[in-house]
Image (tube, rainbow, N blue to C red; front, side):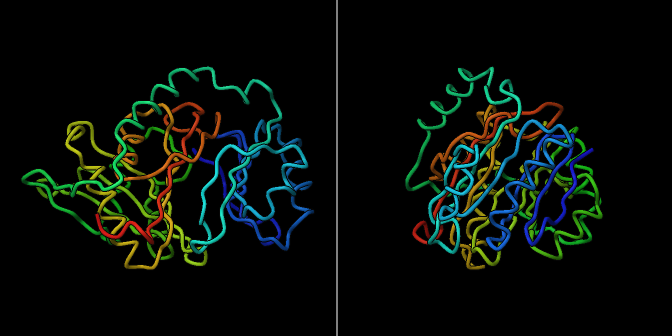
Length: 284
């Protein structure tokens, strides 16, 4: 189960009861200001309790003057120049508060202590190898995602969805052990904006703790630099020490927390934003 993606004007949104929200993924500035009221109407009609919007910094005030608040920020998000604001508007005060805030703060504190401005080169354990995923791997990819994530905000369990994205704007990276996938991740590129979301990290339970995600992130960064991406970021589960530490160790900076934002693995969770400029990081 997952929410649906569609266009609203010339902008792209995702919405549905799964995450009980509307996500404004890509804003066409030409849709302003009317799209803001249209989002409100849709949320109220469907009974959604949150609107989550990712917008260029120069139009942030259009939203904050209409009830939105900034939850996170990434400088240089668009073409390495203009920042992006991650905004939230709540229709239920309960959703606006993270009940496990102390736990989330502990994860951030732990992650901050692992930060590396110049990360060491990661290496794979013996017997593992890197795989650039191709269409012939779609079945194995969807199977691994089904094992790791009982539910997910995007239909990564569906080989058809994976095939569509692999031919358009997503590069998938895998790690293989004894001829079978042990771990996966994806680099979802915004070609026009020169930014890339490092996402969909999944490692089979028996291979966790080996640093596979760290290696994948390193290799993804190098590949994205070659493709001209200027800013990398992730939206990571705020309660997960492993993924937050992985990004902190690779020199990513904390950009903010999206409260009760995303349905993943059975419940709506808060998510942390981490970002890194690929213009100055070079190869690590």
